[in-house]
Length: 310
Ligand code: SF4
Ligand code: SF4
Image: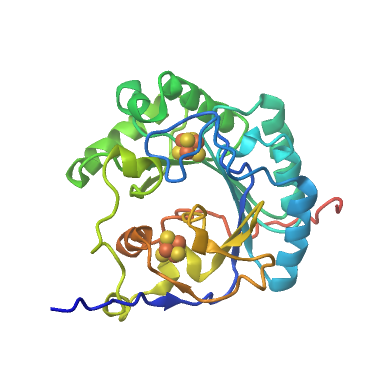
C-alpha cells in the first residue's frame, strides 16, 4: 500500500512581539546532559553577539514594534559584553536573561540593578536548576553545580531581583507536586521565600536525544491538531531569534538548517512549517519559552524617563 505523505501545517508570524538573542552562541561553562542545543565549553558552532550587533538589532526591532527582549546561550554571562548589552536593552524595552547562575560577579549584578532602577522597563533573570538537591541536580548539570547555582540565586535575591527558577522535568508528572514542594523548601532556606518556579518539558533534541531517545516519526504536529488551537502558545507565532548567522524561527531550533530565515527581521517574517519533533512538544505543553505570570512585558510604574541614550 502506498504511504500517505503528511504535510506539516505552517505557522505565520502574527506580530513580532518578542525578540530573542543567542548572545553567547553555543558556548557554555556547563555540559548538561539534557541541553537541547548541546552547548558546552567546546561548542563554538554559534558565536557571541557583540554589543554593536545587538544595538543594531534593537534599532531594527524598535521600528517593528517589538515589545520585549530575551537573551540566551549557551551561558549569556560568558559574553564579556553581557552587562553592557542588558543595560543598552533596558533603553528599548523589558529584558529577560536565561542563565545557569554560576558565572556572574557581584559588581555586574549591582550595575544591572542600578540600570533597572533607572529604566522604565523590567529586567528578569531566569535561572536553571534541575533538582532540589545535589543528588537530583548534579547528575544532569554536573558535579558541584547544585551548590554553585543555589549560591548564584542567593546573590541575585540579595541584589534585589526576584528570579524565575526553571527546571526541566526529568521526573514522572505524577511526582510533580511533591518535587515543586521540595524546590520551595530548598529556596526558602537561602532566603528566597516566595520563589517563582517554571517547570519545562524536556525537548528531545541535541544532547537530550542522546540521553533518552529522540522523537519518533509520529511525534509531529498535524493540520487537524491545530484546529481550534491557540497559536499564541507557540513562541514562533510572535518571536524570532538573532544569532551570529542571521535570524532564525525560534530559540529551540537554531541547529536545524531550515530554521535560518533571513538576515533581517523583516526577511524572517515568513511562514514556517511545524515539521520538527520539538514542535510537537511545543504543541503539547504550550508557552515553553515565555515567562510565567510576571511583570515582564509591561512597563514598571511609576516610570522615570531613561537617563541617557546609546
Ligand atoms: S542547558 Fe543551559 S547551562 Fe546547561 S549546557 Fe545547555 S546552555 Fe549550558
Ligand atoms: S519548535 Fe516550537 S517554537 Fe520552534 S517552530 Fe516548532 S513550534 Fe514553533
